[in-house]
Image (tube, rainbow, N blue to C red):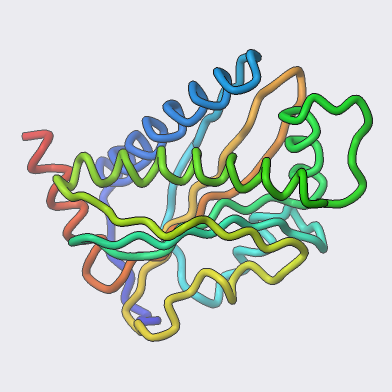
Length: 204
């Protein structure tokens, strides 16, 4: 990955944060409809980072086990997106969405299906928001879940040394439970600049 990340102005960061928040807002509405219980999702801030930054620690809050849902997308803007949870948060969220009374102790087949659906809804909400402002139509891969795996190895586009990584922390608020996750999007080289140009072209 190149050492030269885009130098973004405050208004650019604010605009990208707002786009991600629009996407997670739509995802929250879809998840709320699924369970008949209000779910709120918020993203306080987005940022860009380099490959060698400890995004696994950031995503997991220092937890040893991380549950990750990944999805590739391509259009004029290409990349790979992931929704990452500390496994403890994944278990709480899966239990709430399944209606289970007892907290699960592992991500079994049922919880895997639930978390895949959550990842699909959240990632499609965010990527849909980005594609709308970019005037692009993304093709998506099927989401894939990895449990108790190093997140970074599934995220990076190893064949693209100019790839850029966007990090957005997500806070889930449901039934008095505070669940934290991280959205990470690896953009192929040059795609961030294309996105930024489209953001401000749309706003002007």
